[in-house]
Length: 402
Image (cartoon, rainbow, N blue to C red; front, side, top):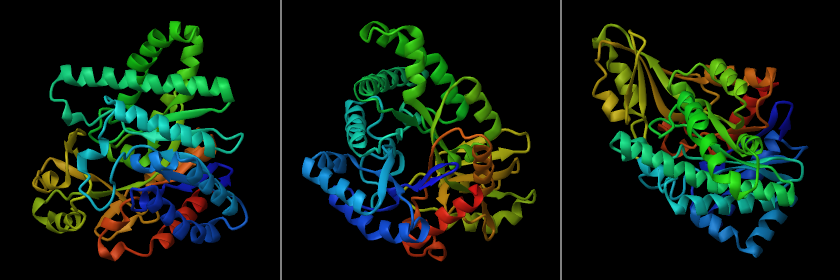
């Protein structure tokens, strides 16, 4: 739905299923219920997640026409898509394979271009469209500085291939679409600082070098095209996990004219750790309830020396629960955004409120997407029917914004 702050929706990666038939069935079962309770009198947007398999199937003209007709009948529209998870995202062990295939591969390029072809067919006139994607690769697949550099270079070249197509599409059709890079714990681009440095020092120079002669564009024109079509996906959970100062990052991005394609509204787990390490058992037991095998749940610990310790997954952090130097944990587990208090544990809900207040004061994107995809693996006491969860999340966000 269109609010003063932008287009608000939820990401359909919450719904299980990898075929287009599965995706569409979930949408038809859940979306009308959600819309009726959240946006009964105006069009409501959908943050569409398609697996690679579903994207291939939806390219079929009959299926695409059927979906477009359903959108019209449902008073719905698609303005943003999630192109991060390529394959199975539920009912399987995902872990680091959420990055596979990464941006060093042709498969990732082909999948992303296919998604943009679909988005171009669905996007309403006068609205820009965005697709969020992985932060190039998973850091620990590249075990030396040389391999990391090579992966970064290859991934950047492949992203520029997508950029070229987006430039050509705007020239031909007048439609603006952008690829929204999503920094994530243990991604090749993990933090706001890493994104900014990559953008300035790798992406912009390489785009000018590659596209200058190829598209007969000036350096200034290429610079503007990169900024228009390659953006940041600001996942609040991911930035909160790294204790990143939202206002400072947003100010620097604005000062360098690096644009944000989408805010993913999401919350992480957190807890202060008492100085008396013997009293941490209850906290450890509370975190243990979130130690499930499907997704990576990286933990970033803050120490009394104001340094950060990064654990690749929750079990490694639990093994170090008695580290006397640590005074806080933040864990990569998308918990319901309307909950700040989860008993002995808390959420980073205050980070969401801060980012949305900044957005309200001076809008830096038109795309707002709630992304809590972990309902199926939440502890039992947090589970309620899916459509009720989404309604509660969207209404909580509306209250914060309005």
